[in-house]
Image (tube, rainbow, N blue to C red; front, side, top):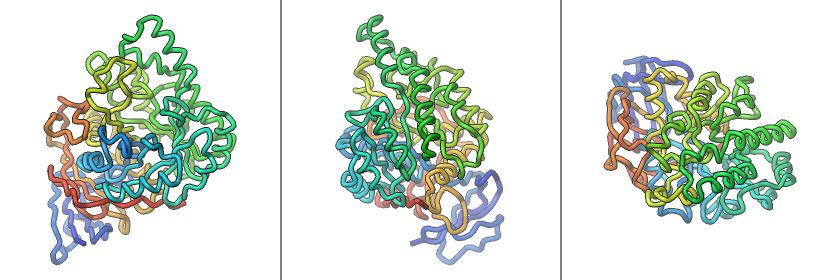
Length: 447
């Protein structure tokens, strides 16, 4: 193992921005001190970080790395590699793969794949169906991040629309339920309306009208109602509407909340005016909606109605995305660019650095009870990211690392650049060079 001394960085942590040094011994943050306070240990690697931001590594609580069964789009190796280049040190991956991760055996197989292929730390959700609630309850709370519940927009039999199954799940779950909330009957009704008007050639800008704000609110409010009835630990994913903000509260502190909320990078960056230029490249479920919704989500982050910023990273091939509206799949790649995109909003004075670190690093660790990660604290795992805040670069095909080879940010110039990503005390990403031999660790939960 190794010793690393990071000197004279601007450390962003727990609501503070201060100049300091940080010493890593093996996998652990050994000490944090004022500039010059920590002596250079014999044989230590020294990183001169003057002018750089040092923050905890990003923890992304919602990704689809497509492994197993859909690996022509992406896999755990390629997408964790891209994530490392984006300052992400841990991820939680969704179960709608092939086969679906709806049994303990499938979940254990996925963890085996993670240990073999992931360059960063990992956890995997077990998926709920109408018929597998007893199997879901077998998941170990200390080593499984959560239960994924599709209350709309699902794959195969993973749409849970049986109220008895939902009530059983909400009454019995002892680990967080993370829910995708869109009302399927409302969506189907809207699809028929727009098919009658356009046939199969529905313009993609109709996507937020088909997967409407009403569909989102109906489903989210029902999930919140069930969670309140059973005092369930519920986390609603990828909120997309202003209406849904009324379902959440900034109180009590996150550690005590039973119902929490997430917003994704694309809902904070794009709005429906972007469909004309980007089309299916920004077709996500739930849909990107209006500027009014985007501004409400931004306000929700700043006033703590929203607890986490994540990606819903979900790569598809560019050929798939070039299909007509109904044939083009929803989702897109984001983990390499999530942090720099949010830092762009810091440059625009929309978010503070401290708020971004809170929502992307601290809060995922708190919300999921992750053991000894997500903060810059002595004794915690050294999952860290160094960023040059004033090093402009442009996203091009040559520097996109996703297996699918494209990004909705292609052509965008970002003011900030990830310089180094450190995972468990090992430098995995270093100024464009990636340590492909390193493997991350399975996340452990204090439950």
